[in-house]
Length: 246
Image (cartoon, rainbow, N blue to C red; front, side, top):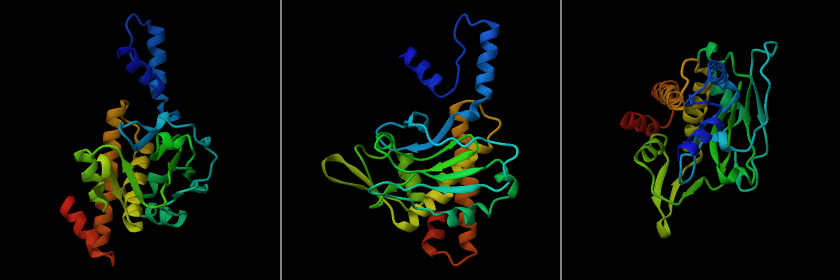
């Protein structure tokens, strides 16, 4: 079990302090940890375990460059058979335009990625890798199936954005979305969570990085959208849901 934990840590780009390590090896470990931006940080893999996106097949890599234009670009791939993208380049840009400009300075690419056969084994909502954010498609029916009941945190998070958990046959559970609720979930949770990873310069451990990204998504996604809904013509149920859960 200890060996497995070490292998998992190394696969995420972290080098634990092993017994009898030399000063030179320890220095190498520290440098490796500081270069974490080369590794993927993902949001909410679906399935029995909370597996995360570093285990997914490699994505298209976009090399950061100091000479790159300040504005980011949005790359759209075909979602794949039976899947759909729930946001568009226009809705992404509109949402990010509500943020302070300095939060977007490092962002170079947002990719709406395709779903492949390999990715179906560990499907993920989103991922940050280098200066790029990746958003993954969902089932075309907007219904996700799970082989176990949701955890309390999973149920609460889905309800915050209008997702509905239902118990199906033979012990299966399904998470049901509408076009409006899944768009809200992606724009104000997944997108903001991955942007939080991109902006996080302080935290080193996986747990701390996830905690910061979750905080960022709540502060600049969920709560911000609630405040905007109160001052706009947004559906009343959206504002009520924000007030009841948040």
